[in-house]
Length: 593
Image (tube, rainbow, N blue to C red; front, side):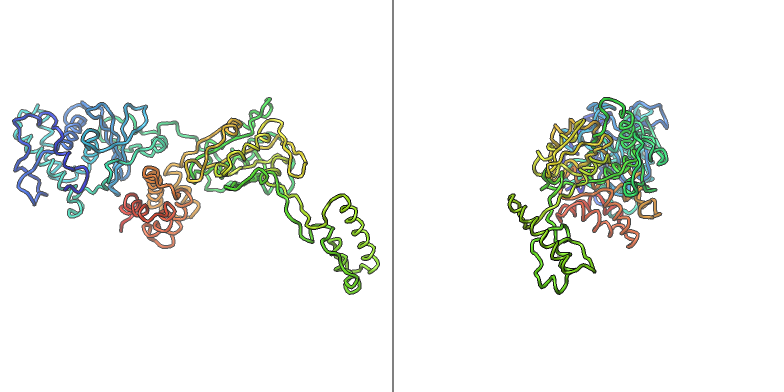
């Protein structure tokens, strides 16, 4: 039985490419690789021969290219675009350190990727072997026989005996170095095998961010893994070009309010969404309907809250936030009636006795009024007692209770609405009752007002900016009500930062100077995230916060693999089997000692 799915039984039945598909030609030979120490023969392998023939079509060392395929490298990754016989473009990225593949099937350069699935009637593995050829070329035997076969091809395969001998050795060399990789040391080609046959998908996010852009092109021209991201790279905004540059009103804030205007940390990289929101808020100020409601949604760790603070800094407005929970109700947004203690009011639940007046008039007076007076006389206290009792009697005659008293406490939302601040409403999709947020629609509308629990009516200040930030596709999250979304002037889906931005952020926050290790950590965090999505592991989280904790732990322990087990791995899932799967697939081989 094969050690990897690349050599499952069905793969040996895949048809051979020309000119090896002739019936007169044998499929086995005594011409074998030096790594074959267990059998006396070598066997043709269809997917390998197809990959070799396509590679030679692309190889321009002898002839001009006859193929649209391409292959290149980026650090420890080999990247390839393989034009299959079915007309699809199979895009593959192979990580030499971890031995892991990522792949996707494209109909053309503008299409989205579909899963690359190893199967007899699907993807046969030729694209994977194609991607491995530069690694296989490091072996002298492989390189020598490749050159021989290439010359035979250039000559039109006039010498089939020589071509077949080279082909047998190449197929056998590949097979032995992959299947017996653990025992061959540096000459082995180690791959992390897919248990299901589904190769992890190349995500559109990583393609857009340019994370899979070859820095060195060996042969061909790339269509999908271009040297630049698939979308225009965002311009980095300097902090001095943001902070206070988008004020839409000149206001004098108190010292307390000025403390609420955020300052941006040196490590913070301003996302383009922040600049876009600030620009829209300012540019529409004099219009009939200024843009003041915005939404940012995306997975944890994409910087939504930091972005909301940066928006407040750009607008020069104080920032407040309100975090929702499953039990949040509309009254929690609008304010709460909290019980007063004895120092909270001038009334009492229990009057002082005459003995209290005689023995400690100051304390008795405090019990009646909430004010402590050292020089108060017994007569003053007595007069105050009569006054309070008379007030309470009138209240009782009107049906009021002289028992527990309450006071109204306004929420950050109400404070921001009244005073014209930036208010971030965090995680509204976790609210159990989907109609709760709809209750705020009146405040989200133009010229809005709402009635508080006290009966008072507050009007939304024209400068108030509402920013809703929420995760999506997480356990416990619900769909946002459409009436709320329709009141948002701009809605942004925040993508995870690129590996380079993650690296810079983690290094600046933690002070770690080991760039190569932190870069590998950042790449691993993205791999873990993608693996969890593909495997439907949804009981955890792995993002920027977990990366920062991992880097900090690594700085203490000096062991990235050990630190990963109780930072990113522990956060990714609570299920032991899922953690073991993530460890084996995404982490262990990258950081093995």
